[in-house]
Image (cartoon, rainbow, N blue to C red; front, side, top):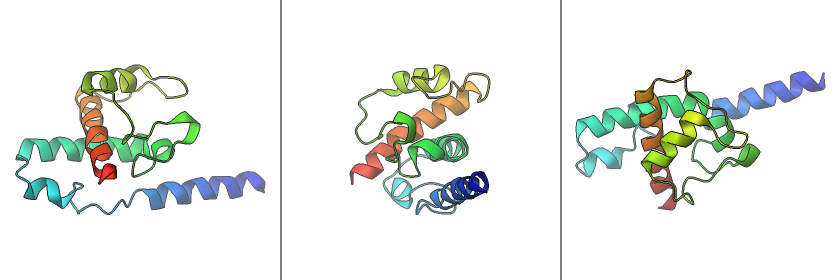
Amino acid sequence: MRISIVFAFIIAVVFFACGGGQSADGTKNASVKNGADQNQVDQLKIGRKAFKRFCVACHGADGKLGINGAKDFAQSDLNLEERIEVITNGRGMMTPFKGILKPEQIKAAAEYTIHLGKQTEE
């Protein structure tokens, strides 16, 4: 009985965490208004999709959840290459995503975490 309640709670958290106040195309409307080119918007959409599927449970929709030692993206000083390395090979309790995600998806997810960190600072 307890396991089913915990499982239902986890499913509910993941389901509700995926909303995030984003537009239908998966990006913040401000990024398009501020002159971001279409390629950047497309990369953010790919990154957001990967993030929603694999990262929200620990990092949260806003990047601040912090379950199992997950880092707050607004507080992270990792550059793009370092984020790609962490996503690819994992760190601490984080799962390595090499072989799960394509390198392009890993890069897009890393870029999205930078974007997300900037959004949470505002």
